[in-house]
Image (cartoon, rainbow, N blue to C red):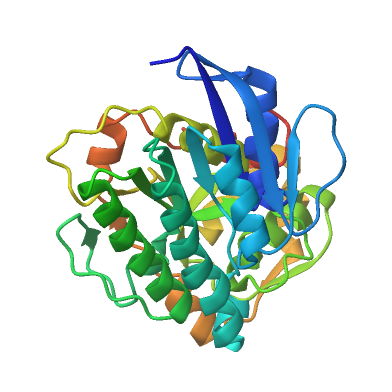
Length: 317
């Protein structure tokens, strides 16, 4: 095995992609192997002398040809249409989240180099009306098209791995914070919006109640987990090749308490609640998660509610 690697990030201009690209620039290596070339793929990218920019739609054969020609050793596939937007526009969601993902897997499989592919799946695969403890053996029932497409891609990537064409690793991302306030198409954007509001000290109306529980992770910790997923030691017997990222399960009240303790007790009065039953059913009733298998592989959460808030808002690494 070479001591260098060629790395590709799809969706590199997005929220998580930008954090991951920044982390890889900062470290310059993954698992002790130096990054010899970094390619960023997205619809629009700035010009940078350090990286190779592949601009355009993944569904464009020309873009796919450039990716294949780059011959990456490691691919982080993050490009996606968010859940709310893909629910409103089925054709767009299918073209990007399903069809383009399959085309990418096939192009990479055809390279003959068996690259490692870290796929950003989602907790949207689990469904609603979950039991008190979500376990690896629990049946998956995605409630939205976005989650259905994510689950299909997990299965496809595991099959490419079984066939020896790729080394696939799907990680199910929870609510990643704190996104910019204009996070279009994300029904879960309230998880970021409340953090920005409490830090700034401005009034905020929350679309879920104070007892609503969600699975949380900062963007920095997510990027660290994605990078680790590329080199973690996966047992050959683990044919499912999909793991939930370890999470902090926190209620909205716990987030408000943490921010009030950190930014000032006056923050409590700035939050009012106007629960949307649809939003709360999908994003506000997450139970405990059995993520022991992911933790055993070296994946991790933010440590505490305070660390989550401070890391999500850029106060600590």
